[in-house]
Image (cartoon, rainbow, N blue to C red; front, side):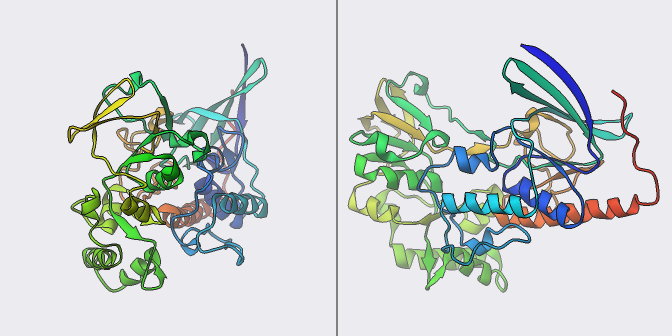
Length: 401
């Protein structure tokens, strides 16, 4: 394959990632009169939502907590918009602010050039028999690839030799292709629970060790109630209230094999980024026996799965609802803002949005889209201050190839 190389000067910031975080950052910058270059490795905006999410997905939090800056959801949308509605919202968002990402541009390396005092971002783009290498250069780099860039594949003894089909939820669309099959869902988040619900009429057998909360409490969405309580009470007290109300509504879930972690749901979210399960009907299927709970897997042999409690069962397929991870350490050559271990900012929210020398992060707060919106506004304000102060004095010279 032939290669060509270009060097492109970008007057405004470079934003890597055209998901909700990248769009939010670009919109906040545009609102302040600053254009940015948005690079996206996929062929569409919000590829995680469009290409890797299952069909029945809806937002897990009420829409008021998922709005991007400067643009509310349509009033006609339900409290929990569907995947399709959220994608339509993002497309309208990009159109409103004139955001036109450069699609099919994979960032392979981004590093700060000490000589030029600028960021150099090298990308590749395959076009037929030609592979174009384009290097973009800017004073500012906004990392917006998010916490969910790459699928996490668990290490399970014998998984590679499993004789049935194995897929990650990033490739799962609906339970229709698994009709009549016994399916083991491995995972303990909202995705695992929703996939189980989707498969319950096809004998899905999930392994679940989670917090589980009713989607609504006292006539209000659970998250809205939690945010209201946090205005007056410390997080551990709110956690205790949520768990007491959850137990009153859901009953004792331990009898069904659902074990609770030692931390409360809000504290667990704050410390680890793990979102508590908001029940949308899965618990009723567990109670009825349509969905069966299993403990951790000891090993897999052929199509037999052996569990730590000693039992063994045969499955036709395994769905890995084991989440995603950041891929930032693979391409960003900077050890200041991001940890090489997990690809997340070293500093916790709200202090992880800004690094040194014009480096920023958005979408890594572990606070969902609310954290994204807050970081996007901070980034735009900070760059705008620099942008204004640079008026009247010369901008950095365009680099020579």
